[in-house]
Length: 250
Image (cartoon, rainbow, N blue to C red; front, side, top):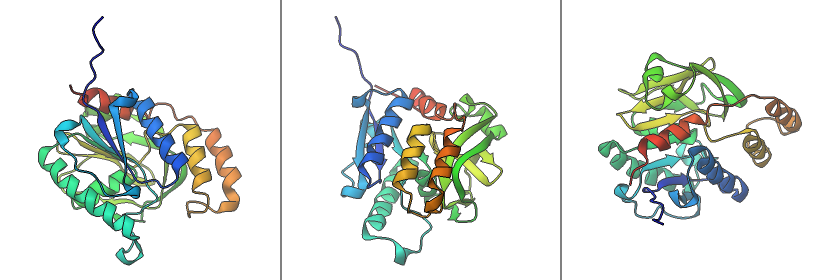
């Protein structure tokens, strides 16, 4: 019997210091992306410098969420955050030049957005919960985002967001409280403000982990969880699955 052929893995760049949340994020990208464990290489940037990355070794790069805020004043950022941002910017120089497959979610949209000249601030932050995300005409025609319905519910929860998208970026999705829910740069670089990797259990876990991080008043924890438990987020994860299907290569 011949061995099963595996394509080149995807690279997940993570920055979550909370081990339980970090492990759950990794598991969620595997599950919703339809990946086997060996098909996703994780690097936890909050633990140490980014290793050398040869883009030819990977099918694509994924950057998940983070406790970091791109728009925080430089003087308030930790040494670790400043290092992570430098390393991601250096990697994005090469990713953009190669138009290599990239998917950034939440922190990833701010990282790519700032790198390409967009403006990220706290104008369009959204409380933890669900948002109705609507595809633009470009989104409906897009080979990745177009796999979703014209309007769908997704999990959100962010202090900052793009106020001005990067020049030449194609806005793919929007929502009533956040004008840029997804965009594309070039042909192969994607970013979403919403979380395609999250299901109900995943976001409830994060609510507990970041209870005292300023996303909501801590005394409202139980109310936030109850509201999330009633949500009906079902299709947002198709972004991850479609990204993997489109860019997986041998």
